[in-house]
Length: 237
Image 1: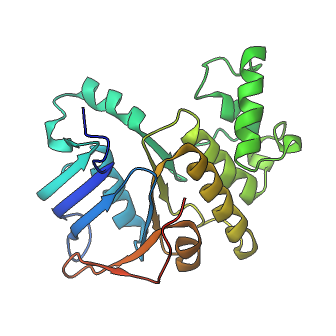
Image 2: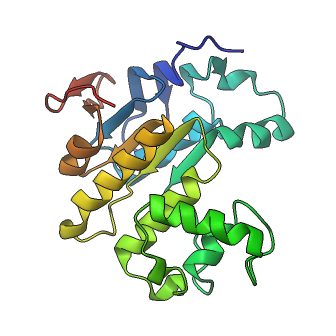
């Protein structure tokens, strides 16, 4: 068992080659329990590689990734890796919402395989989760394909936090949002993750979102993997 004060995520001396002109390099990154850290300037390809490294779907060519004290290299087989995914919640367009199902049915999926109809004992959990993530009750009956971008973004957030992961990863979570909706979504992320004490890693090109949502907003220098502060933020709950 990891020590209570050990980082949720620690990446040290990481290098990973992928389909880009240069490899992903990350000299050192730690995310503590209850801390929100944003990496700014991370494009789509790099973000996908980072998510894979953090979740153990891939291992670095060099360096080490540790989640809750365990190196991702020590995950021995597919069953252990699938079990380890429970530690993560991921907000990403790559995490599919079912377009032909309602928002409520999509939010029920972490709790039950039966969503048509949603079982009565799950309805209250769905309503509580939706309210916590800023989804209006009137939107729960809407089909995902008909829902506005801000509701879809919050549905992704709700699905990701439903089972109380140890680390929430936001992968370009505001890419489909109009600029007018970003601040409100950021405030919901802060409220939802703060109340749960979640560690959060934000991968984004949106500096304003990063500054609003994170305790630490950092810019990655691709040449050497160092991280530079984007701006001063106070560490608060």
